[in-house]
Length: 476
Image 1 (tube, rainbow, N blue to C red):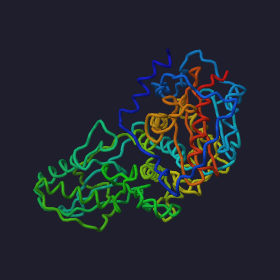
Image 2: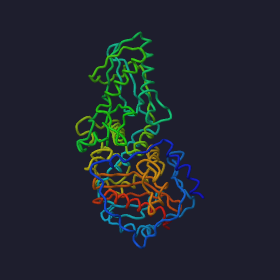
Image 3: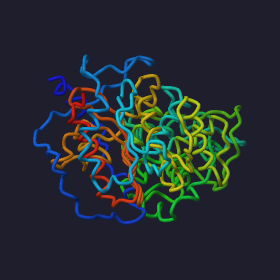
Image 4: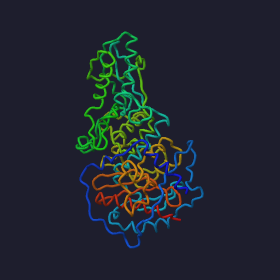
């Protein structure tokens, strides 16, 4: 009964309409398969249908402990979890895997295998980045895009402020992507110019905020033309995101600038566009207009739901830059990745052997431990980090949303459908899954799995069965 009461909460994650593939699933390399082995004789395929179970929403205030879903639910035990996993662990795809299962409320380790060996995390890297970004931004922080008067009265400067999700027209206050609108900014700017009697202006862009390269040197050159990621820029449009295989613009800043110029012309102004970047905007600059993005916490949740590589990098670069890191050189991605690791370590989590060359997980040079992924998840669910907590609410739900919409739909995995939230990760020869699931006793369990040297489909199936076994065991 208590699990059934959470159905509406689980369905609520669909309200934003998020649905996407893990961007790294699209490349590099083809999916590899081999015939799936039959279930071991000790494993009984699930035949019952369980109600959808959501995880608890964020506590009302920071610092509150995460409540038990079942109130008096008894915690799972290591012996119970080992018994539940016995058959799954014999799957060939898990021969070379790092696996961790922990109680999501106490943090107690219930099962671990190769937990401290650094491995390629692929897109599960975003979980670490969410913690670092969430720790750097205030809980209600937003990103401002504004216009100011330039050095001369007839010069208008569009100041990039980190919002890559600007609507091409009017903003939608109920949306995350498209929350702030270029149309609204054009209204304010045109009105301010008319008050000053200006009808002809030159438009340029100040891109000095969180400066850095558009792509990482450790990424495959095919990533952008194949829609795996967009360019990492501090100004961009919601209708041009590189998600779901859609290819983003070569220069998001120029595309946004040109759209804004068109909107000003539509409002009766004569506008010429300067391709020369504007100098850093002085504090004394006269403001013409400004629009605010959706909260950073909601942008992080969107990045996790849709596995948006560019959006993750954009938010992480801003957080690193605001923390004093110079991200402007050719090694800007590596500097941001190193900052993520240092920020995670500063929160008291073990980062031995962990190294990041980017914040999104597209780099094959990244190394993370399965234990650290669960450390971050336990920390996120304890309620003391509200931005991370909201971001974790954006993790895809098994069988329902995001990169897990098409998973947990077989007899041996459906026990976790609607009950697991997790971040996927896929690069050739490296597959990962990290998140949380509610078990049959109503207890929150966190898990991580990093698999090497297995076919992609086999690895996914094995990881899904791993999570389903934990969900269904009632491992007391």
